Image (cartoon, rainbow over all chains, first blue to last red; front, side, top):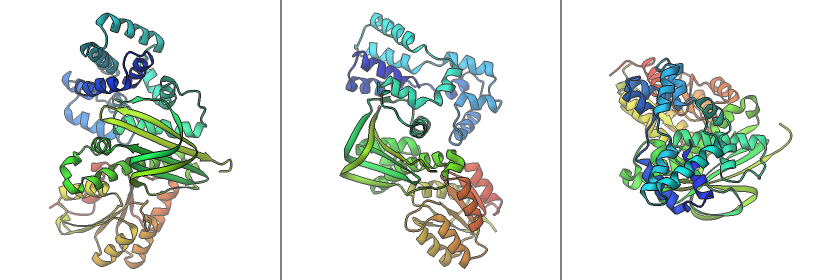
Length: 302
Length: 125
């Protein structure tokens, strides 16, 4: 979960421009090492145990290591060892920064020291706590913290980013939050929650990016689907929004009474005018940029 | 009854969700599977084919899942309906069960849960 912050750090320090960062992130994908892979490599867990944790993660908002310890597959000591062995994402990104000639080893060493001292890299416990504040942390890193949002909007977006990390991946960098009054949409997927509050959640992205997003979400390669590909891509993106919004309502508990989830919908190549208070947040993945567009209108009476 | 002899209906507006569920049913030996992309089609297919098991989503266009359950139940009082939905609020769960659903599965669904639903109702191939 640290690539996005190191990416923002590099952008803020003008070490790279967004195009160069995208290039680094694409290369970094091939170098990603997961805790489950390390656990198998160390002989701590079997492949079946790792698979069962991955399935559990689709139902519980918990980290891999946390669930593995709860299930008794790993002891807390083994987890600490693995976490110690896990190569931090930002280190891989930094390594590529040198390899691609954006800076020298010495410059990288200085950047790393600066990044570590600015961010006081967190322990495992801290990372768990960070999960509950992921949106706030992202806003701090992308320099958009000055836009105050209500607690419920922050909670809604916090869950969104946790779902994004769980179902699509944590290899993204968030650029600056913007207020917008219109969207020039290529592939647009949208869903609304209506009732005593009104939430609009929309993703806008290029068709090629939509394909990669859908492939990651559904763990399928829709480019093999021929004529049906477009329908499966739209369904995957709609499913992702539906899943997020559904989980949000579940988490609201009794407060979800009086709120309804509307069916999601997809549009192509349309210019949409957006209401007052609509925000857009570009989320840069190695496969392209996903524009998160949202608006929350809340009323006092529940 | 063997799963291979059973008729199963999947009602979900998402082609992806239908495919994923259909793949699981087929992997356990299911052969006769009908698909509906909205609540209205689900009701029509249910009345026409009288399925042995029905999977239904709640949030669907044209006619939502809860209304579809009520209409299916009024025509087929013994219909076995399992709700598969990402919206699992207590109110909706209660409403789905009161309308006649026999089970509720939260999306994204766990394959072993679908397996237990199938094996508790049908014999293997």
